[in-house]
Image 1 (cartoon, helix red, strand yellow):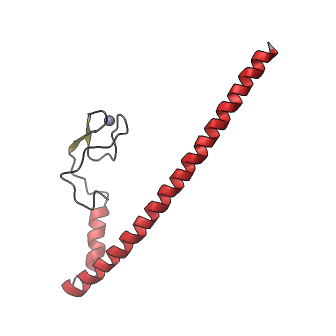
Image 2: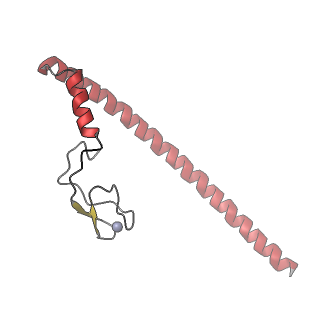
Image 3: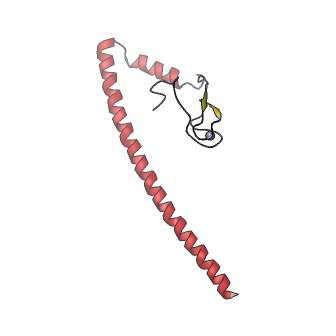
Amino acid sequence: MAGIIQGFQKRRISEARTLARKSVLYSEDSIQKIELLNAKVEKLTVITQALWEIVQQTSGIDETDLSRRVQEMTSPKKVKKETKLRCVRCGMAVSSNNPKCIYCGGELDCCADQSLFELL
Ligand SMILES: [Zn+2]
């Protein structure tokens, strides 16, 4: 009987070690993804700044105009236009207001009606 319990405990310990190793790998992978995203955000920030400087110099649009437009676009009162997109994994139709499929978490077949900025 003690041997059965010991064997059971050894198996549980082994499973826990395997799970711990997988968790470490998953967290290392997540850190790499975050670092890549940070690098992309920094690059996009530089590009946006460069574009903004060109627009200011060539159009007469100023910081006030930009702030007003950003406020309009980020206002909670602004309702996103809703369309239905199809999940590439399960095939269900899902509102485009969701970043992923609400049924299975799959990617949504996008994005014919979205601008490049919405696809970032
Ligand atoms: Zn789905």
